[in-house]
Amino acid sequence: MNRYDKLMSRIGNGEKILIDGATGTEVDRRGVAPVEHAWNAGGAKTDPDLLRQIHADYIELGSEIVISNTFATGRAVLEDAGWEAEYDLLNRLGVQLAVEARGNAGKDDVLVAGGISHWWWKSEPSLEVLRSNTRDQAVIMQEAGADLIMLEMMSDIPKMIIQIEESQRTGLPVWVGFSCKEDDDGGIQLLYGGTLADGIKALEGYDIPLISIMHTQEPLIDACLDVAQAHWTGPIGVYAHSGHYIPNSWTYDGVIHPDDYAASSKRWLARGVSVIGSCCGLGVEHIETLRQIMP
Image (cartoon, rainbow, N blue to C red; front, side, top):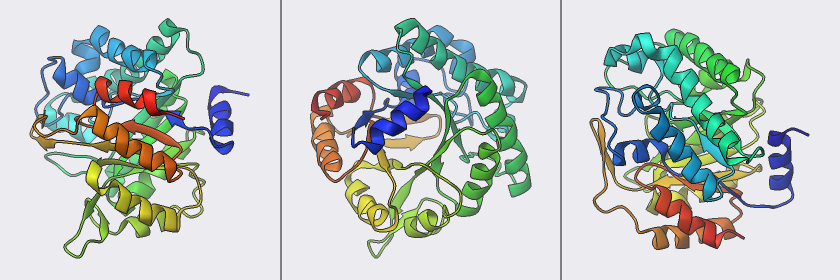
C-alpha cells in the first residue's frame, strides 16, 4: 500500500490528520523578496534552502501533508510577472524541495501535495488557456514526485471543473479546496461567483476523495461547514486564513492567536473534520499549537 492509500485508510477509520500551515506566508515572513504580480512565487529559485527548511519545520511539528509553494506559479501569473521563463523550474523545484524535506526528515509516509490554483492578479486567462496551463503544471508536479494535486482557492466553478479534469489526467488523486465569503444575506458564496453548495454539487461524477474549506477567514468556517456537511458525504478538511492580502504582501495585523485558532480547530474536529491545518497569515506557531490538540 502506498503512502497515499495508507493515509486515506486512516481517514476512513476516523483518524484526524494534521497538514501544514501557510508556506507562502512563511516565505514572506522570513524575508524573501516578493515577485510583482506573483507574490512569493520566486522562493524556490531565489531561496531554495529556506523553502526546504519551511517544509522541514512543518514536518518536524507533525504535519503529514505538506503543500508545495506553487499557489502563484501558474503560467499566466508568471507571464504577468515577467517570470515566464522560470515556469518549469518553479513548479518542478517547488515540489522537489518538499520531497527533499520529507527525505531529510526520514518521514516517508508524509504526503507531498502539488498546489494548483486559478488565482490571477493582472491578466485573467481564458478557459482554453487555463486548461492547457493546468495540464502542463500538473504533469510537471507528477514528474517531480507529488503524491496528489491540491486544487486551492477554488472560487469559480467553470475554472474548477477545467482544473479537475486536467489534473486528473495525471492519474494522481485530486483534492478540492474551496475559498468562501459571506454575501449580504448571510449565505456562503465562492469568492468569484456561485454558492459553495453549487460548487460542491458540481463535483458529482469527478471522483474527488476529499474537499476542504481553505483560504477563508476563520470566523466563517463554521457556516461553511454547515453547507459542506449538508451537501458532501465524504471527508472534509479545513485550513483557514487570518489577516488580509494586499498586493505582494500579507498583512499580519489582527491575525488570530495560535491558542484561539487551536480552540476553533478543536471544535471543527469535533464536528467531523478529518484534516486540519492553516493557510495565509497562520504559520509554524499555529501548527505547533494545533499538534497539541490533535486527538
